[in-house]
Length: 222
Image 1 (cartoon, rainbow, N blue to C red):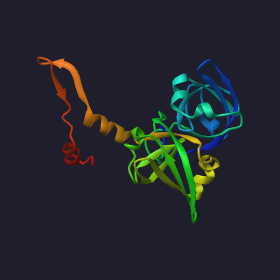
Image 2: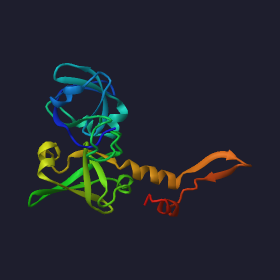
Image 3: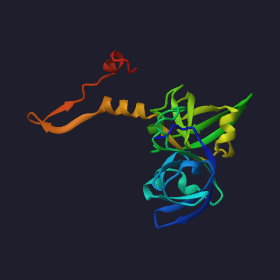
Image 4: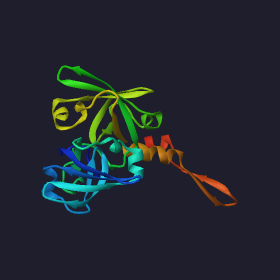
C-alpha cells in the first residue's frame, strides 16, 4: 500500500522489451535507503516488484496486462518517473490509500497558471469519472491529489509549488497520457451497492446485498 506522496523522481536507465512484456531498469537515490529484492515500488503510480538491484539502480518486470492498462509502455530511456516505496507500518499517512493498481489512463488537456498554483485538466472515460468527486482524492501518475472540479468529460486538480517541483506532472504537455487510480473506498461502496449473489439458493432465488444508500448514511459512511 502507498500514500501517493512521491518520494523522488527517478530516471529510466534501460528498457528490455519482450514479445508482450518489458523489463525496466530505473535509477534513483532515496529509494535505496531501505530497498530489498521483492519490495513493492510505485512507478508513476503502478505497483511493481524489485527483481534485482545495484547501489543506485533497480529492475522490475512489467507484464502485458500492466502495459495494456497503463502508460508505462510510453516510457523511453531517460524518461523521468515518480517513485514511492510502500508505506511503512509506522509511517505518516500524508496522502490517501493508494494500492498501485491503476484503473486506467487519462489525457492531459491543459495547464493554466493561477498565481502560485497550476490547474491541470485531464480527460478520462466515464468509467473512471464516475468514481471522481469534487474535493475527493485521485492518484495521477502516483501523485495523491485533491479533485477541484469534475464534469461529465474531465476533472481538474490544482498543484501547489512543492508538488510541481517534486513530481513529473508539470514536465508533461497537453496530449500526454497519465495513469489514474480512483479512491479505493468509493469503488468498494459502489460494488457493495450493486452486488448481487448469483449463487442458486432456496429454489434458485437470488440473494441481494442488504447494503443500501440509507444503510450507509445511517451508519455514518456517507
